[in-house]
Length: 218
Ligand code: ZN
Image (cartoon, rainbow, N blue to C red; front, top):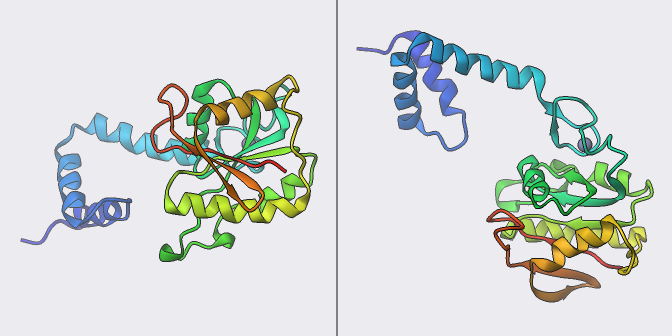
């Protein structure tokens, strides 16, 4: 017996979600079918609301309910210090440390030749545009994966000629806190061109698993 048309459509839509194959999609669709109406209404409402109320910050690409996001419009944050991360969820990981008082730039992914993701697919041009605007230091906090590290190397080479200066290590304030954040998760140090790379040991109290940190010094 063929499945009713609405159920087929639901399976097709669920199958578009990342990590959901045909079998999982069908299992979820049948689960939704037998779920009480009020529960499925809540799910549908939550999906609709997230699309209506949550957007991306036009400055840093972080998720936000109002544009610009809370970090980009805050006078309490150091706008000369940018922490570059791959995804919006990485921002939450850094914020949980309560140590970083700069602002963010979310790349929306990492370079991946295998998946056909190149520099133009990431938010790199807008990062360069921001750097021309009084930024003193950039922390490259991409994930410690092959793609994340390749992205950090690419960005390090791209940013270096822009002449961003290293901030005084003895200076008080947010820059030192950010460097402390990076140096405290420093596991090893090696040179990538003239940029310093901090391979992160990821202390659990500082950063979530799977999160790495690089810092650049000129
Ligand atoms: Zn923002």
